[in-house]
Image (cartoon, rainbow, N blue to C red):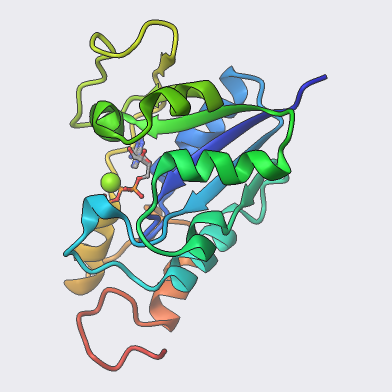
Length: 200
Ligand code: ATP
Ligand code: MG
């Protein structure tokens, strides 16, 4: 039977329980065999903002997903370098997942931007899109091509990477917002502290 593979793209700076719950819930609802997390290269949506080194974001994603046998992490976007376009992500994943059925998982906020993405037709050809609910954002597929996108309600997790970064910068806790290993990695690498002496 054709493998059903979820693709969860993100900056993951840092990865948090909102990402993990979304992936887990969609995997269950859509009977996915696997979910591949794909940390971005330098994302164009965030050009100008500082994004942590790709290797740190990659390792945090590995740490967060390691215990789930159905979760894995792909380096395709990091190794390609430069800004990440979802069309390239899907095309690169397709090379190793030849006849798999791909499901691209995206939060309500990112789904908003979907129509502004490059190569929209190619995107919908390569994957079925799944938009998940996210507190603070309206999940509205009205303007999306019929049949190309499914909307799924996932347990509400009012967590964002931005808030996690701000918490660390202010010396406040991120315990239970991100997996324990990620809390420890952030501390070990002194990420988000706004100081210049981050180990490189
Ligand atoms: P930032 O605040 O830096 O933008 P983020 O929390 O939005 O970070 P991203 O890496 O930008 O995380 O998101 C990757 C994907 O996960 C996007 O599709 C986003 O919509 C989705 N996502 C992020 N947080 C949640 C959440 N709490 N619930 C559901 N989906 C989420
Ligand atoms: Mg975001």
